[in-house]
Length: 510
Image 1 (cartoon, rainbow, N blue to C red):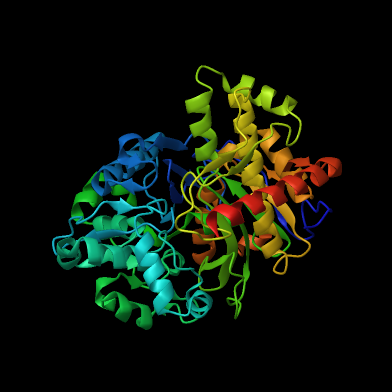
Image 2 (cartoon, rainbow, N blue to C red):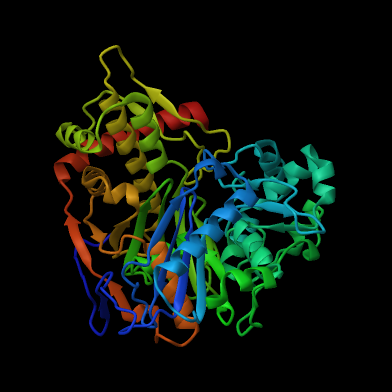
């Protein structure tokens, strides 16, 4: 990764952040919606991609989810509807021209002939398809399917989930007419059309990344037909219209052009200004990911540590994902640091010396994706004693997550050898100490971007680019808020701790 901060490249218009916009000055033309694993965000944007001040709404999932593993489709749909109604009421506007959505990747829900859910919405953290994962690995040359689909065989993806459902819940499998992501289910309910974007389809593990079509070899092995999957939207496709029920509820959206939802990770990269090999996105929210996005075709071979999806038909995104990030941070705070205020916790974390706690943690409370893709991996704490304090466990867990990011960064190096790391995500914005730990562990500067809601902004910009309202997302950059320089003395200490973590990983999980 580069040690040079190039905040704004020549010829690129900087993103000024959220601006105060009166409706009379800049009319909102786009409704943006970001459906994440922890909550929903929505806002209105003008035609240049600037968020309308005062229009942003956020709601947490609450009872709609359980540990980010499963969601109730109808509760989540109702929450989306309430969020849209609230944001449309926030600014008096007659008509919205476009609807742009980002949604969490890898979800799966079945629907029957009437369009009712036959299953809950299975999220990436649902790990029940372990046996199916090993079956698929024994039946296929995983390196070949990985290169073709961009995905390893893993419980997070559709092939293992579908194989598991067919085996364990045959009546449900038989009663299901369509297999959809939640984003596709939302489109089906709003527009009565089962359509998905190439971006959302690319995160299923069932899409041929080169042809942008459903992979026939995998479909045959799973016992499903292409008619059981949503249509992959094509450029210049037909304008979808709201059903009469929703048209009456939201008259401002009756003439809006709907862009099929894109994966939240792709939207986050674009929204944080990481749209070329010059910048790598490092995001920590509930989970975590490191990604590089650029125009072009997928590589012929993908490192086994990484995945490769699509932003759209012109851009790809390569990276690695961690199942534990801010979610693990919150779990430790709520379990071991009850009653401690966030500011107090942050101050105590900052005072602790690197790797001074005597602990080695495998941060797999929600399982492992990158870099080992072990479907049986679970969280481990080695080195506990009666003297160990809760704050030390939290610090050790944050360092442990940083070590996994260092392994992803190493695998990504050939794709972005001189890139600046750009940090985003609520978990990192809430903890400068964690960003500094990451900079020290990886050994390069990390810049905190100015945009707080990168996924929401990214979906809006890609839609406006497709509509011809902005020339290119590459023409807009994100200003850097703060740069965290690495402490190379700490880096050496952390390298020893990373080696120790890898040794324990091999002993317990290989």
